[in-house]
Length: 151
Image (cartoon, rainbow, N blue to C red; front, side):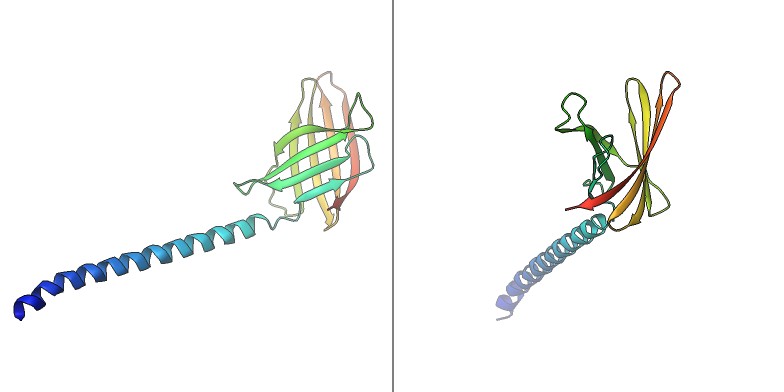
């Protein structure tokens, strides 16, 4: 009888080890999924996210979203130069970091100019956009546009 109980001891130890490993892996997976969901929730909480529209043809729309890296990205749109019935994208840009939560900015570097757009949150449904273009020939152009958030 002592021989049979001695043989069962390693089997119980192996089973206990396997159960411990399975529980540890299961708990780790739950914590990882929960952490990912928490990170995604934090990432999507920025008030600038969404589509912002104006009636100004020079800056008809700005789309703002967060990438998988939780950085904000923007794409500005204006009335197309050759087809006034459509709006054309300026291209996607990463937005600059700001210590002030109600302020964001992004840049475009064109072949003939450098342009910066500065966005200031007025309230949850309105932003003011200050757009400055420095042309390479030395001229400068500045516009201010109020935009509203659309669904």
